[in-house]
Amino acid sequence: MNVAEAGAGAAAVTGSPVPHQSGRLARTVLAPDYQRIISVLETEMAAGRDKARAKDLAAALGLEVVPAKVEGVRSRAKRLAERGWITRHQSGEFSILRA
Image (cartoon, rainbow, N blue to C red; front, side, top):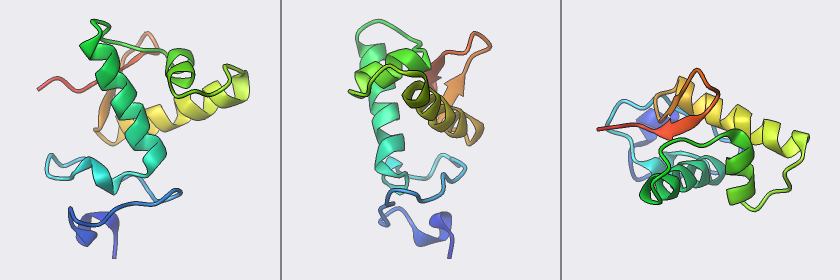
């Protein structure tokens, strides 16, 4: 059974795959690290900043701003963007999807 078949009531755990967002999936199907990235982007938007770089996301997540940590965040954010959860801009920045 894949994550989409598990339904909206199923919660993901660390290491679980990132499903494609069909508009019907709740954020709870995402692993906690991915949920936190989306939360940070929402916070950034609420503060008037509509985009964030991976370095800024890492800092907001309380991680050391060192290449290994920043690249880990960038990889997760790119995966979210590829699967329709957030937007990746050509500038290398990320933002939440606009409704």
